[in-house]
Image (tube, rainbow over all chains, first blue to last red; front, side, top):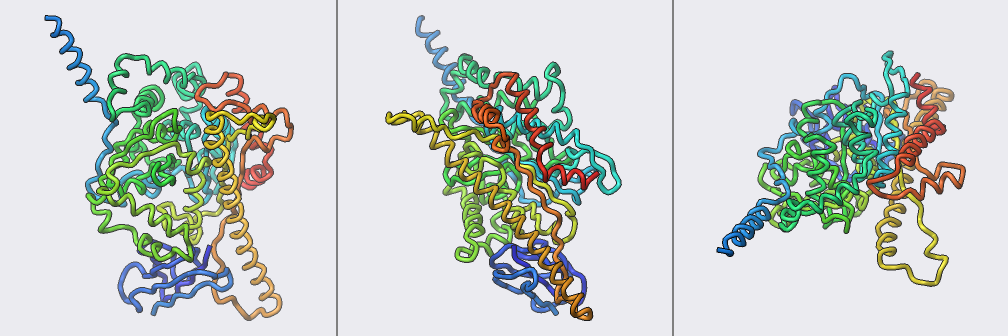
Length: 68
Length: 474
């Protein structure tokens, strides 16, 4: 398993490849590979989406995705 | 004048033969995630998700069906207290994934619940399947003149005849739409093998979406028959593929496009995407042919293994873990495999073609099953290790630098337990061999069925992991 941390100013649902992955500001479990991250709900964040390759993360060094 | 009866008979034969066909696969009008047989569409109030219990039942004919039946009996008699509520462990089972012989037990329990435990003197699973000479009765069916005409049709085969028999005699016409209406868990995953791809084909709406077919109108007996469609004994089962006609291709899940880029970094994810895409093209594959689920995975564990580590499946267990929904996760794998026959090596005479076919059909399957359980154990170990690493690091930090905090919070990884039930756990060699040598057939002597039911209970009683798990829930 890989680990991803999606930060945003508020608590929102994180979507990976259009599907619910978890909540913002939590350490989330994800499968290794290419993923497209977005947030559910209002489009009041930037960037619109983050495409990332998630691999070689550890529980102490998760991949960080930042939305503003 | 003599020609008239002959013409009549010929007409009747052609008429009956022409009518005989496998049941057409029901078409799905519109792809809709809110409808159909999907885990998320079940809302069983009695079954908590915080205690997440998964059972997998292997193939192995009645031997497998009886062993898994014994496990169900034991779970029903295992009292637990979870979140202040008294119940039994069986009522907490969320998912059953099954193959071949194990699919009869899994399917019957999902359709009829505790009705499966009726004594063999009453109408129920014991009388209608477990203690019945199914194999003999299927053979007898071949001698019914009506079946001669039907079997003469190229569109109706012995597997369709077996399906009709299971539907009438065992599953009493239950369709997947009945399971959707019931809404209760467990969620059933009956596994067959896609003959052309050699890959797992699970009877769930997510698998039927790309072929634009509605699982709701499919008989449970058909899924179970496909799952136990042993090659050579039965011809492959045919499904119609309407891929491209229900809007699925336009709204296909986002993971497919992402996974298509993963050939080098995650080949198994890439493979899943490419296999899935073959179903979407009904011009190239207007029909899908299915065989026994044991060819792709004789434990029924591979689909769950994928659901456990991947966000791509509808089950998506990582999301339930990340959200902290699952507190304890237990997987019980019931494996009724038998033993490789070493007698071939006691003589210089080369084994017969039949013997070679038997070996080719069974030995690679058992080796693959061994690998599957190893992958599951490794996955659990790694997740546990990650959880402990984080906690140890947090503790060190608190001790030596109390004002510092780790940059990210701890992932929510539940307690993970895996219980394997198989004859190789029996310490007494004579007893072990007795079970290993029980035939793979849909007809076993009553005494053997009783022994299988009892040994399942005993193996659970002797499992250290199971005992610890039960103790923690009492």
